[in-house]
Length: 86
Image 1 (cartoon, helix red, strand yellow):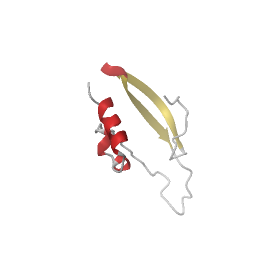
Image 2: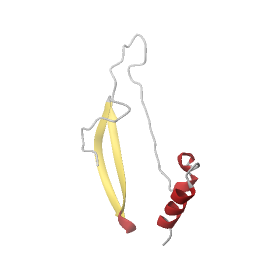
Image 3: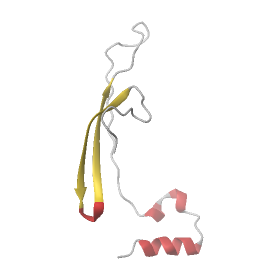
């Protein structure tokens, strides 16, 4: 879990300002990070008071539906299917 002050991995001029974690059944965690910061701008080239907004969410899908796993060998596909059965 990122700590406050940690820079964003893709937008280095913003950093974590708050972090919270909620744990659910099955040892799953929902981690929410709030970022804040501003990039130094040349006022002649861009607006000095630019506002950036970002929203991100994740979803859950069966592993075998991902394009990365479409060409698996039959044994590997079978092993993955067995891990997802109760």
